[in-house]
Length: 430
Ligand code: KE4
Image 1 (cartoon, rainbow, N blue to C red):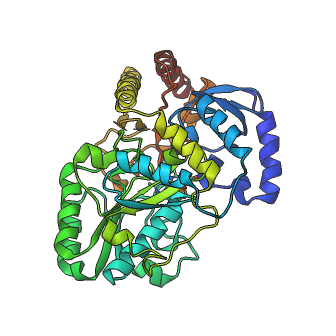
Image 2 (cartoon, rainbow, N blue to C red):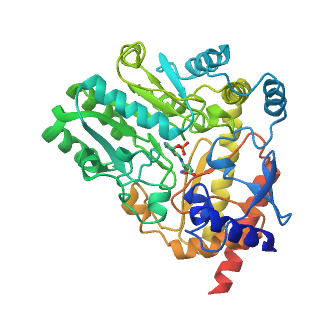
């Protein structure tokens, strides 16, 4: 596989951007070697600057549920762009996207649009602290909620990839106000609330974790979070930036029937353009400026182009498509497991809706400590063999892969065959 142009591009990029990238997970650090530079995508396929084409399961880390360059999205953006790109004034598009989202996530009685998942969770935390007049927050080890200071403690995603549990530059006081507890650990979270319940403003949780690979929150765990926050006057925040429109049409709250006080969204609701959102109970959201006193703002929040991409994307989604995607993902993960068994490689494969990941780990994999038992050295070697088969998956054991509406059964068959060949080649390397 010739990736010479990517290598040269990476050397140039590394002269002017830290690590040669604008987001660390793209740097391929967990798998070694240089990242591929992409020049185009269409549907389920991406092409790098050396003209290698791959079946793409990263899907820009989740947003592209309709695949790359969906015809309707592109056409809508072309039309919208001719009317201008930003006004810094209200548009009806913001109301339209908010109403669309509310129909699908009814717990979001009111919401704000922002430009990233990080802004959404950062704002939700500030809102929870302002609403409860408490400073302490709770997150779970291996959950990643973006890179705002209070949440860069024991985080997943790139933090886990690079083995950093709290980033330099985060003041000790911020980390002091953030309690971290093992994911899916009912006893640990119950004990924390027994000892500190009256200090805690909120729990923020990925109800299906996607930043340490895919690990579903158990129903018992999620119900416990709901009960503990209700009983102690704290707020429950479901961070569905990744799982929203991905775990299912109505997100994890739709799958479990558990209603959070606040929800954060991102990725899919922007259809590939920068959009995040935080929202929930009206009595809480009304505390946000200018109706309330808890500050939130953003120059490009609700940007008309981003709203257009989000509206055109969500308009094309319906529950039947999630049934079809879940069937394909189920066939894919069953095929991957069968190939691993055929080659006697211990693998645990998880999937929820359109999210899936594979751990080189006999399992069970229920929390971050379990994921850390995985064979990341084998993952790195395997990753490149899979790439050589034309299969582009997330370049880290601590990330999630995604399906789109454009992936076909033929792609699934090709991917299973790719895993088979990649196991052969990787085992032959040893
Ligand atoms: P952004 O600020 O990257 O838009 O969203 C932050 C965020 C918040 N909450 C959850 C559950 C998330 O998964 C994310 C971002 N996810 C990562 C992928 N693991 C984004 C990829 C990246 O950092 O480049």
